[in-house]
Amino acid sequence: MPALVRTDDVRRQNTRSIIQVLRRHGSVSRTEIVEYTGLSPATVSTITSGLILDGLLLNQPEQAHSQDTVNRRGRPRVTLSLNPQVGCIVVMVLSINKLTAWLQDYAGKVLATAEDHFESRTASLEDFDHYLLRMVTRLMSQQNNNPMPLRFISVGVQGVVDAGGQIMLWSPMTRLLNVPLGEMLHRAFNVPVWVANDCNMAAEALHWQDSKRFGDDFAAILLGSGIGMGLVLKGRRFIGRQSSAAEFGHMVHADDSGALCRCGQHGCVEAYVGDYAIWRRVAGLPEQSPPVDEIDSVAMLDLARRAHEVDGVEREAYREAGRALGKALRSLFALIDPITIAFIGSGVRAFNLMEPEIRNALRHNGNMLEASDVSLYCYEDSQELIHLGCAITTLQTLDRNLGLGG
Image 1 (cartoon, rainbow, N blue to C red):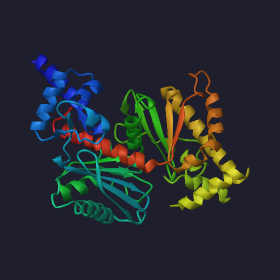
Image 2 (tube, helix red, strand yellow; image 1 turned 180 degrees about the vertical axis):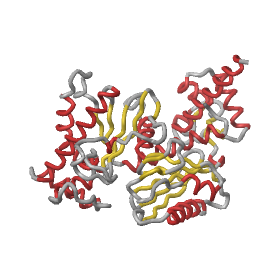
Image 3 (cartoon, rainbow, N blue to C red; image 1 turned 90 degrees about the vertical axis):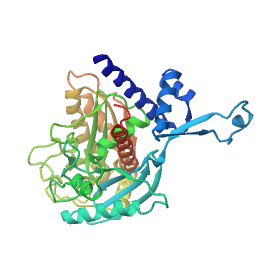
Image 4 (cartoon, helix red, strand yellow; image 1 turned 90 degrees about the horizontal axis):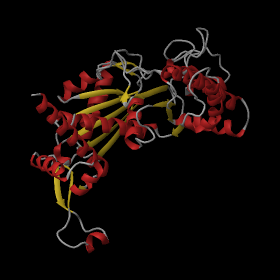
C-alpha cells in the first residue's frame, strides 16, 4: 500500500509539472514538455493522453504561422494546450472605494474586466454583498452564446484575512469587522471561494514571474495608501495561526505617543510611511490628527515630484518614511535573517529618496548577518501583481479540485 501511495504522489506531481508548463507557455508540443520538465517522453505521453481523454487538454496541429513551420518536413507538429472550456473563474480585488474584477477561462485568458466605485468606508454589510454579487453576475453575462460554467471565485483584499481564506477580519477600506466575503459569494453562486490578503498575492505573482530572483525566501512590501507585506519563507507563503498575518505596516516604530495610524493605534510603521502619513507631514498637521481616508493619486504624484525637485518638507517626509522602513526591516531581519525585498505600489515613485535611509538603518544591525547589501527591487504596478497572484493561485487550486497535481 505505501508503494501505491508513493506512485500516486509521483503521478500527481508529474501532472502538476505538465500543467504548470502549459500555463506558462500556452500551446507546446510533447517534446517541449519533456524539455521543460525533465520527464521521460513515455511519462509525458501517458499523462497528456489521459488529460485529453478527460477533456482538460486540447491537441491540434501547429498553425503554419512561421517560416520554420512552413519549411518543416513530415507531418505537422501536434501541440497541446489547456482547454479553456473547462470553465471560468472570477478574480476580484477590493481596495478603498474600489472593486476591480476579471473573468478568465481555464487557460488563464482574460475574457472581460469591470470596475466599480463605491464608498467602502460607509458601506454596510448589505452593500458589500450587493456590489460583489452584482460584479460576478455582470462579468458572467458578458460571455458569448456558449457560456462556460463558473468554477471558482477569489477576492484579494487590502487588509487582514482569516487563515482559512473566507473572512475579511479587518481592513482600512471599511469600519466593519469580520466581513464574511466567502460565505456571501458561495451562497450566491455555489462555487468555491477564496479570500486572500493582497500583498500575499503580489508575492505569489513575483515568484511566478521570476522564481530565480524571488525564490524560497523573500518579501513583497506594498507602499501606498497602506503598508502591507507578503512574506515567503522556505518556499511557502507565511500565514499566521489565525490570520494572514505579516502585518509589517503595524510593527511598532515609535512608542504609544507616536503618530496616529489608520488602525487606531499609535506609532505604527504605516503612520510614517503610508500616503496619508506623508501627506499629513507635508501639510504640517499634528501626528495625532486623523488619517485622511483617500488621497488623490495625482496629488501624491505631484508631491513626489516636488520632493525630487526641492530639498524641502516633501523630501524630508520621504526620508522619515525611509528611516521607519529601515528600522522595521532591521527588526524583521533580526528574526528571519536578511532576505530579498520587492517594494511595490505607487510609493516606489520616491523610493530613491527613501533608500539611503533604509540602507543606513540596515548597516546598524549589531551582530546580525550582513543586511546592508540586501537586494531591493521596485514595481510600481501593484494592481497587476495582485491580480496575477490571485489568478494563478486560483487556477492552481482549481487544478487540485479537478484532481490534477498535489
